Length: 284
Image 1 (cartoon, helix red, strand yellow):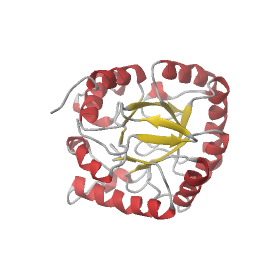
Image 2: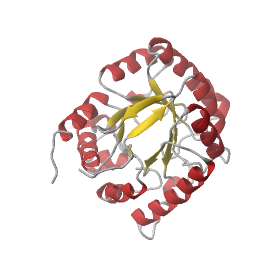
Image 3: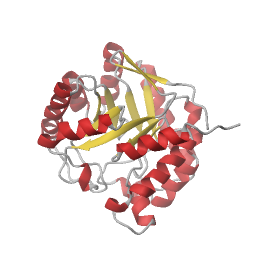
């Protein structure tokens, strides 16, 4: 299995060991996320979060803005209104839960951290809010908040029209590198890289990206893979998202074998099982 230099994260003073890959469960507080079963209303959030934690999730990723292709725009106020009560409700029942806020807006990220979130997951990699990197650096230094830097082009409304690359893997690495240099120059500490499966990438490009995932280890940062139940899987298999669990497990297993440190998933138990089984393999 490929080796990654960085094996720990400091989340608000808690050290998270990534020597064995971690699983991040998805909780979408939205009416229009592409996988209906991931949409969680406030009254069901705590029980769903508890189930994910019981099944072995290290992180819970909470989002109030659907980033599926062509998703409707949501105001920062509405987004914050969706996620902040959820963060507070989960932490009331599970004070030790490590919550990731899935947002590309600096104001929402800061409010979520103030409410108790421990990570920031930005699908835009800082490209949609000029204040995000400064906010991330400040929160990283003052509160030890890790940042997930994802690769995307454009917006959720335009990204699928921007999936043209001279060389996919090289271009994505180059674009991520520029953002990573900016973050490090500002003093951001723990950074996790996400190649952005499905974001400004066709199904064929997603397979290419997964095939070459190990190339991203040149950054010596943990890699997050979020390919759970995405179009690449269910369109390739000519099934529905609701039927894409087996395909997701296959793709997650490949990601683990190529050195993924975090799997972002809708189905925690199956992902945890994939981690446990692949961790038993020996590579020479």
